[in-house]
Amino acid sequence: MQRSIRVRSRGKFEVIDVTREVAAAVAEARVAEGVCTVFVRHATAAIIINENADPGFRADIVSALGKLFPEGVWEHDKVDDNGAAHLKAAFLGPSETIPVRDHRLLLGTWQGIALVECDGPREREIVIDVRA
Image 1: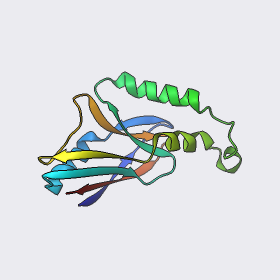
Image 2 (image 1 turned 45 degrees about the vertical axis):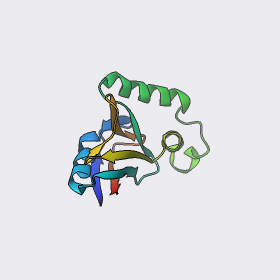
Image 3 (image 1 turned 60 degrees about the vertical axis):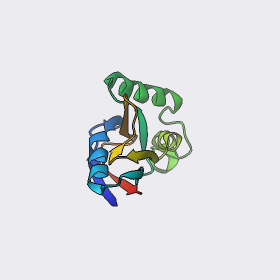
Image 4 (image 1 turned 180 degrees about the vertical axis):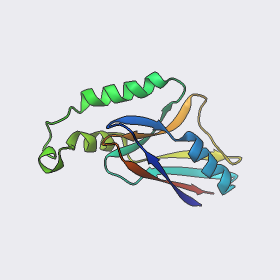
């Protein structure tokens, strides 16, 4: 089963929890055992799995990536002034794969799935693919 969801970011750079939407797609797919791939169809956004309980972690991601990839110093900035956004997204990656058992994501206790917006605000399409 494959399904897409749309997520609208409000800021230039933010981390948006999409765990609930992905879990709902997995439950709807009725796959007892398999995998779920979550993929964002954009070059300046990423998907991560990490801490989901502490909102401070989302701020830490934003801060750390800002330090690793500062704005305005990249070759790509000559084209459309978002070189840092492309590098942040490439560093994190466009997808994650999660095992599925008993119609549920096998995430750890503190893990969640998030869209990392690196060049917003924008509407992003996320493809959720669940396979046995």
